[in-house]
Length: 224
View 1 (spheres, rainbow, N blue to C red):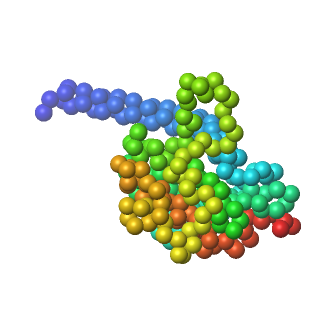
View 2: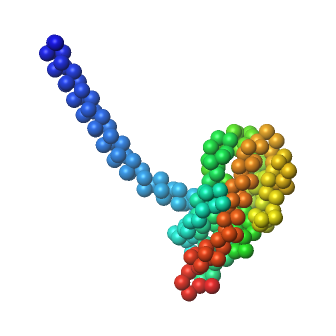
View 3: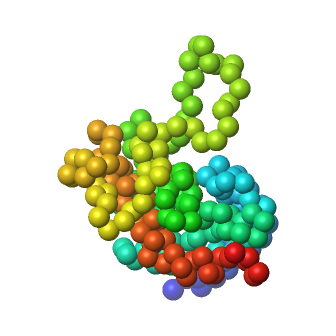
């Protein structure tokens, strides 16, 4: 055994260990520094989205959430829009892991009776030009509307907008038409269409099944 070589290996190992430790410490510090700004940015995005899918409110809906489990076993988070001490609408958030490219996350505005106000897909990685068209809300610009002031509210999406005003009651046939249901879908993006339909259905069903408890927990003290 060559003692000199053995000593070199120990020195090299110690050197690499120190580098690894320093790198880990730097990553931990950076992660800690950016965690706050990232969380604040996500909160701002959530609050902006809530203003798009809910009627006017004077509280901060994202400050209080209650969570229930959907019939499929997914966690669904609920928030209340409160105006003058009264719950005027509810927002619900959940994700479906069965998208074509993984998780599809939605934020949905609900009337207090469970009717859907609006569906907004907040996170997705579906195929651009196909599955993404099921999820994205875009204002189509033409040469005649290029300089028009953006309209208020959500941009249209014919797949997402078809849920407006509906309830996922037990007798509702919430499947895409390709599967014998009543929900429109995009050809070539059937998997994404199914995933979004199931996600919206699960969220609304969860609310309808737990409405009294949700309203009780989200209604402010002394509210209606």
